[in-house]
Length: 316
Image (cartoon, rainbow, N blue to C red; front, side):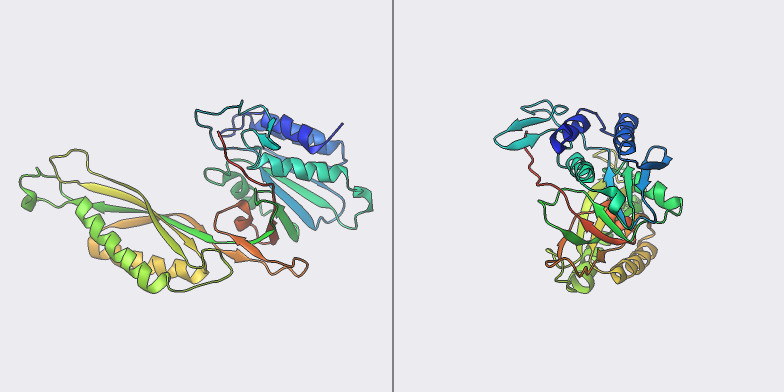
């Protein structure tokens, strides 16, 4: 008997950490959908399949999962039910969403649909979104409506913040720490640059609000900071990673302009790692519009997007 539990059990059994068993995962989905008369449009490290004419509804799901840490009380690759909860690596994010959508297709009279359905199974979502990027590079014509099956506690999410992430580099002259007057410390330069950037953010960016989002302002996070290679010398190079979760597109340009001025002032440089725009769909048939602060593949497509998936519970 086909049901979402059996489907999810099969999907969880495949180790797709960093796309390890990605092809086996795609083969499973392809075989499943072929039985429902779906046709394969393209299959590489990702899979695109469709049924019917001119699909107006699409579903996006990614095959990969994050790695697991030691301490699980169950086998990460075996779906286990305990206390009315399901445990397994990717059971929520996002094999559960894929299993639910596949099960829904088996309960749908696909031949009666006026328009078709298109399925996208991507890879590398957890690290760099390479799968959805590769699909977009083919000039894919996405359906008018898209469902992304990320875990949302069964709430319909209609908007997400954008992401602007940069790497910043400062440079100094390495000398012994007993004579700092003879050199320049890249760490000290980075601290000054970041202080100015953070002050700019607090005054010019953070005060603007968009109440559609749970955290209603653009956030700034200095996540990685690395400089120097010995305790008794000045750092000749410092590197930091800063990400902004954006509520409006204009903030990206404002931050870029500030970074350009700061880099000129401190003889530094920056490079953009991610630049993804925020979105908010006003969909008339959804009564309550909710948003998320996290990133999904929904941010990469220009359809009317919703994010909808199972309840998430993390436990080891």
